[in-house]
Length: 252
Ligand code: MN
Image 1 (tube, rainbow, N blue to C red):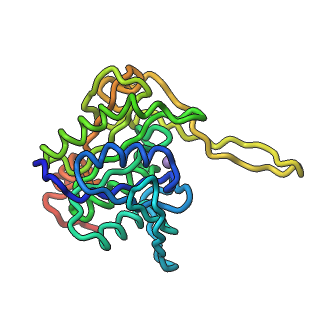
Image 2: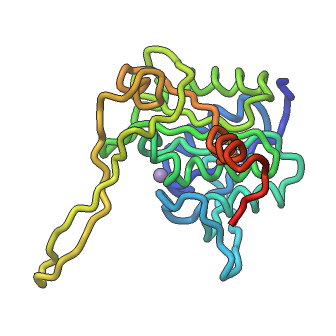
């Protein structure tokens, strides 16, 4: 249900000064009261890490008139802290990430993790990502789609966690599943100026994704919406294991 004046917390993994977070906050303010709590420096690909070995600090960092705070922590830290300090948050939005979060990258992504942390806390959440090739996409083109998605998901409380990826110029929207057939990550060897071997963990985008997946949608110019779940249990395998064992007890 649309709850006018609801509290909306915004975070990301690119850091509080990213142009993407401002674009997302600008759309969100049409739906309620907006507060930004985001990492003080970039935390891309930190996944769902949380900080447990040092204290976290929150610094007010007014951003174009938005109520905003920077935190010396991870995206998940920011959402945990943001919802703790601002009572009654009903929606968490993460992004807009500078770069797509498709397929396996959903596991690496700090953008998705911020949304996941909200889902852990029983707060509805949406992660937004868009392509980044040296410059951000034209957010004015993406804003109507983001506005439409937020409006739809608020009407659909059964969608507690959704991963959204937007092409630079969307042709439409598709519900998709996560593509995990081809892993993009690669270890690339190199040499530093002193002749020592070093390595880069790099991503090589792969094409030819299966129809109906997040990657397929983006390859065809569509916005991809993937509902995610928190329970990673492989249900068919669990059923199979139980069937083989004749119960839930594991014999050793
Ligand atoms: Mn990022």
